[in-house]
Amino acid sequence: MRREAASLVGALLTAGCATAAPPSPAGPPAGVRWDYQLGGASEPGEGVGIVVRDRTAAPAAGLYSVCYVNAFQTQPGGDGVPPDLLRTPGGAPVEDPDWPGEFLLDVSADGARDRVVDLVGGWVAGCAADGFDAVELDNLDSWTRSAGLLTRSDAEAVARALTARAHEAGLAAAQKNAAELAGTDLGFDFAVAEECAAYGECGAYAAAYDVVLAVEYADGPFAAACAAGLDGVAVVRRDRDVRPPGEPGAVTRWCP
Image 1 (spheres, helix red, strand yellow):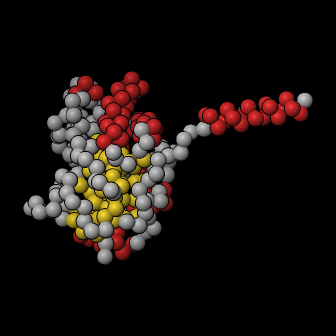
Image 2 (cartoon, rainbow, N blue to C red; image 1 turned 180 degrees about the vertical axis):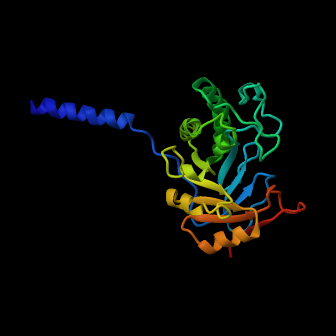
Image 3 (cartoon, helix red, strand yellow; image 1 turned 90 degrees about the vertical axis):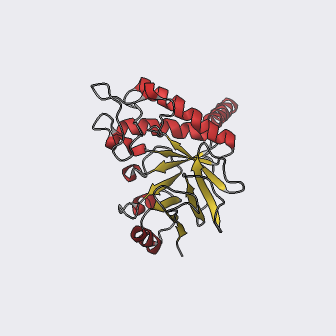
């Protein structure tokens, strides 16, 4: 009986090991400078160890590279996804009021979500194939600009599916904005936060993640974020169009 019991316990342990979820891929290192290069790739500045670039760009050689993906909206020009756009009751696509030319993807029901996850999941897989270490899934907060056509639970369902796709591809996944979702069980490994000092949100991200990549677009909030010195929060000051150095209006600075 004891031998049979031991065999049964062994089998259960083996089965448990076989079905255990793999660990999340490594997130970015803490305590190093980072750069936000969405407006065009450029040579990283001195001391930069983390670079975020658009999915159409190459990762930064030898540095921790994060791939930007507009996961809940189109890029200007459409990204080839008009059939999956969110529509008003009158049939018009829903444009982001803050970013003209970007239209919201329809994540309001299971079938629509599946199409979006398959589309965006393909982009995520492409980031992995190109050699990126992580993916930034932008516009998680699109539901707040959907005129009530989308809900928080819609966004959460897609976020869980996309972080799972990222992990399966070997990429860590970054939460982008939506501070009210920081610390919820969506599968994110770190955060990229725009203007968290300007909106008083840096502490919410820092409480939820070991690493927060914070970008500020104005001098006052940038100075405040640097002065706060929150553990794990790396701050960069960029111009709002994140232009490459040398272009008119380009700004790139780090905390002293």
